[in-house]
Each structure stands twice: as C-alpha cells, then as structure tokens.
Length: 236
Image: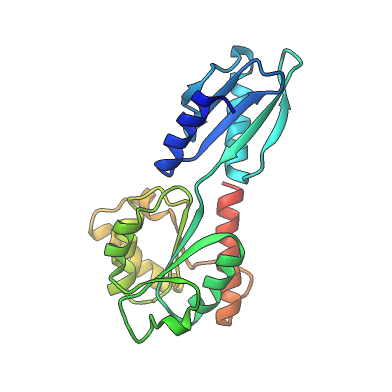
C-alpha cells in the first residue's frame, strides 16, 4: 500500500470509520474511500468506472468480503474493506441476554451487556463479556454507537429500555431491536412520540425483536434476534 494511502487509512481507522481501498492490480492507481464514498486519499478513480467502483465499495463494506473487479480499460482492481469491529450492546442482563451474549461473541461481535441492576448484572452470569453496570443512556453515551453497532433492549422495563432507545435512535446504529409484544411496542411508540421522536425514527426499531420463527424459550429468542441482526447487517 502506498505510504500516503496508508496514512490516510490510519487516520480513518483511528476515528473508527469504515474505509475502502481500491487498488489497480497493474499499480496505475490506488484510492481511499470512506463509507460515504468520498475520496479520502490516494489517486482519483478512473472516471469511466466511478459508479461501478462505488457500488462495489458499498457491497464490500456491507459484506466484509473484498473482491476483484474488471475496469473498463481491461485492468483488474482489488476493492478491499477496512471496517471497524462489529459491536453488540445488549440492554438488560436477563436470561435471553445470557444466550445472546455468547452467540454474539461467536458471530464476531464485541459484546457489551448494560444493566444498572446489580442483581442481574453479576459478572458470573456473563463470563468473558464486558459489563457496564450503569444506566443505559449513560452507557450508550460513553460507547458512542456507530454504523457497526447493534443495540438490543431486553428488559421489558420502560425505565431502562426507554432511555436506551432515546440515545440509540440518535445514533447510526445499523440495528435497534426491542423485546416485547405488539401491545408493549404500541405503548412504547406512544411514549417515544410523546418526547418528540418521529414515525420515521421509531420505524428503525425492530419490535418484537427477532425474526418470526416461532421462538419461545430464551435461547430460541436469542437465535431469532441474532438472525435478525445478521439480516440487517448483510442485507441492508
């Protein structure tokens, strides 16, 4: 990688921002793009291939799979994703979280469980998982969720879930899901509207959380939630 491209890439990664490096195999150019497809360093993209390379760059960022494409001039280009780590923030150290947290780790997420209730947020219930034993709005302000972050609220308690959603809906989190029946969510929607969130804001919440697979047990609900998170990540 060219030194100038590497330095610009390191600056983006220090800021926890996704990036794509597009390199012609014959060495004729190398360009750095951010997740908005803005040019952030290196050489300009070939004008005849800009749209195609932008589409490919979006695809590799979403899939985390780099690829080689053929340019108009007959030259191949390597399109490589540099994504920040995936994160999953679970609000509520409940039984479902005890299954979802290790599943999330196995799926490649840096998992954080947030719950101010010390009786739930016991370290021995979540071995090897980062615990934040503070109120979720404070935790999310500290964690600064980005476009590589999934947020799942599981407490069923508006005093805990609602403050988390107030912060989550103002972030770029790629997934926001909340446990609860349709009736529970309808009441949640009314509360969010009452504090100024729009219908478009609230539509970002997946509720009831998880894909509709008929899940009943805590483990099954965790499976459905992780599946829906994966769907949002890979098929957005």
